[in-house]
Length: 441
Image (cartoon, rainbow, N blue to C red; front, side, top):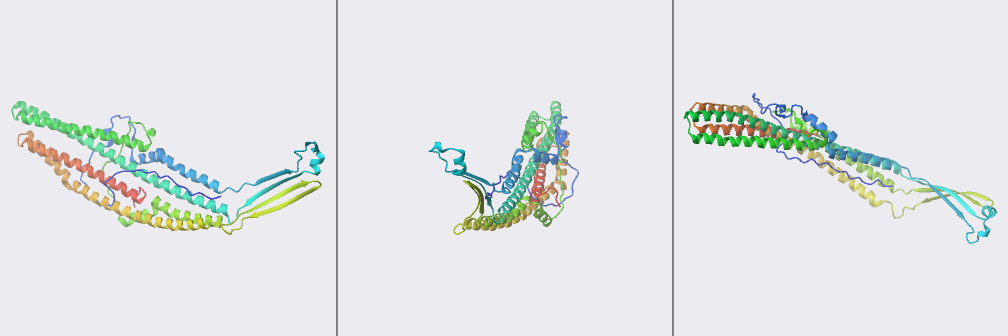
């Protein structure tokens, strides 16, 4: 009996981000990008979930994840198969029966002339084949568990990415509604000024046409939010949560401490894909030992009881192949090369972990610097510039073009800041994925 090499399906969670790694903490001003997510919930009775809740829900209910976990159970079933002993064989025969002379059938003939045999044979495995099969199966199960854990790591990253996308959509929606309400007040004031003769009809029409942009922003943000929640629901397990749920999280800057060496050291301890590669070397060693054991020839022993006439005899038999030609040389050699293959794969995985962490750290640090620029004063400057221009326009001290330009600059800065903050948070999640744990050192 040979233990077959198992193949394990991988759960692939593909996400697209512009982010990944490291962190400096610039001074944080008082602005926050958006009100809490609950403020955007249309149904006050809807279920709200945090990021940690979403990850745990996905790990429990995501169908791809549940399917991947069955590979562990399949591998454990292989352990049961590997530990089975050969079945004994029962032998029997009845000879010299007078089939073509039925008239001779009698109890005396059967007792004195016919012969019958009854025996048992058993295959004795040499080289501790069963123990080696079991060891190899258990090592493959260990590899499978680590591969499933790596699938969980990828799933958690996918959920985090989609969760942040929803937070970005809700923050953008809040900004769009705020801008729309603010500009509506400007339109009302402009209509009053037009009726009073302070501005011309052309300026009033330009202001009303500008409303289209704000209304379009609200519609686009609403669509992004609905689609983001729908995509996140698919990752959580479609049936596991009501369709009118919402997310609850602080879409805000989260400073990170630590250096790349600390993160790399943590990743070498935590990354399940590296652990799977290391266990793959152990599994390859076990397969090599199993193939060497298979090269040992087994012995078949048999004991027979024979009755013929007045004789009652017991016979003993033994059989073993002579290992002249086939000594399992090919499989032993192949398993030896497989050890080298597993060792090279482990070295590659080790380097990949270090590379992933460094890339993620540098990406996070770059995004941290970008967010820091906005928080260092540009947000306040854009806000003040718009407020001043709006006040001056309402009192006739600024032109319409100056006011609209300040409005566009404010909106552009606010949207860019939210995009930069989302990129930073995605980079933080990518660093967590690269390290292999959500608890960074």
